[in-house]
Length: 382
Image (cartoon, rainbow, N blue to C red; front, side, top):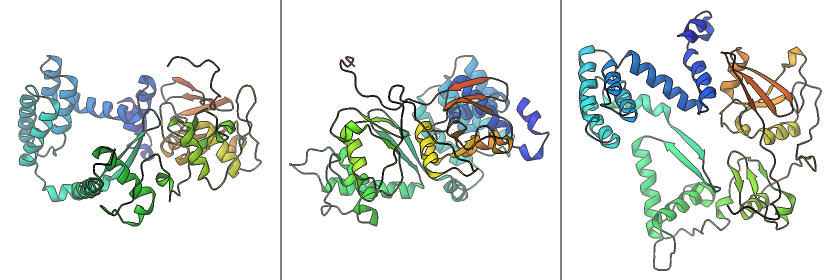
């Protein structure tokens, strides 16, 4: 409500209230902004539009997960007829209180189709605009690749991958069906398969330890590899946005790199040494140095990869800020705009150390991760 009151003062800021509130909560609770946004959305719906669900949560009839699920389902149909929506909420609460969340969602989806005033064809036209592909880093050099697609496309892709994977099964194939599906997908998108050929028995897929997973990849990524690792050492490399990767993978990625950018570092502290520029436009080598240093957007809790971020002058160029290693930081488009609009402020007392000041006046200090260090002579037991 406070943010709404503030943003209403300027028509250009209308619609910012939920975004700004989510950034404040995200930093305070140390949760991703997307999670904070869901908290704001769910809490608003729960306290203002779903009083029966709130009461069921307060009395212990529903768990928080069940209550969130009820709120999402209840809000998924337009509030065109208060009697219908109230009855829908009551039936949802009854179903959620006697089953698991997964089972409840299946039942609620059927009920939603019965009561929704808009046809599924019209809704699908709107939903398809939200399609996208998402990358979420995981542990041990792995990551989750997710796609939000129309169900016919998603099912068709899975069927095609599954068919090709099953064709590769045999008595001499050590990989499981799940592993084969992953290898078929990776081969199709990173090698010759990218041309549209996902053959079944004709496929000549290699195991993920081979080199096929690196063919045809044109995207630019930052891989930090200690020079001794390139010469056969055991120190891990660093893949931007994902963290440590094993030495063999680091060497393979480096081996397929069309060029290298040398980043000088202090021999004892590991701090990167950069050069300043005298123009507003950031030179290519300085762009790379800042992005390698920051790795992600420097707003507290934001994990947007630096390679997809804009480089912001912490002290604006118009106010005497220099285009330098110590006055540049990676900010994603959203947080760069929030800074430009005056909601969030940033200071950089030393290169890479960012102090973020929230709209409520809270301060958050972040420092860049240090570059990978050589392994200890006596490594820890885990």
